[in-house]
Length: 399
Image (cartoon, rainbow, N blue to C red; front, side, top):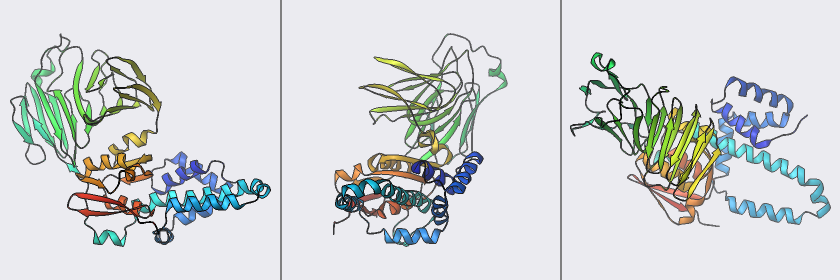
């Protein structure tokens, strides 16, 4: 019988299968691991029992991770050196197994269970499809409240079911586009906090805009480059056109592509811009910074202090497009900044150190924020209150 070969890899695999995120190959891989390791199968069976999970979380309601870790260190120090050497692997096995149960169980519980406390606290609902469109003449339209069906600069502009689209008319389809760049009529699409929307540009490029974002773009593309400007976060699926590169301008630099899919996170109140490539090939270019060329699965991190390229888990940075937030060892402060925009809330902390609590897990984008807060509270390190659209986070008193 094989033991855990990579306990955290097994945990991640189980989590994906239990949450319905795994593909067929991953499901087969897990089944193979369960056949090899009976202990792993026992844990997997426990995680499929929602009553067992809820009971386990109730037991952990007064749990303090700091106290538990200190207690663990004391126990290890009490083990005689020779016995400690013999038992080190054995102890590690049970600790790892406990981590798997808790970490995987936390994600499963958070996504699929409700807590009695949630009934007594106000529910904060997720964002909705909403946006404001500013036309070249300066008129502003709330696209989610008013029908949009106009012709601007020879382009048919329509809005239906959360998608704003631009389509060439017969007149513009035959016009020459390969001309020198010139000032074109622009639209501006603003997504408020608590909102999202999708726009299909005149060239066929699809842009999914996240909360608190703004995209400025021409009604139709002219010249040698297809230029748009982004403030905030958006996922681009760019229509291929080798003769007309697509350029996304941000406050920290430009992303240049031909035909590809990528995510850009460039909020103007943040000092860092993240460009994450899903497929194709892109280049990030900025003043006084060496150009960065990305391949699928890579990310460019650019700030005023410099730049770097790294390999990342794509799901963590583009999962929001498919309705799932994924956090890997992220601080509570970072997570809540994301949620402040999506849920249109303001978060306050009793002490600044609460921002630094790290968390790994998943949350359905279209669920209430309460399930996430309840799961955090069950760690025993903090509690919270909701007042209107304000969330107050407190540290739990030590016993």
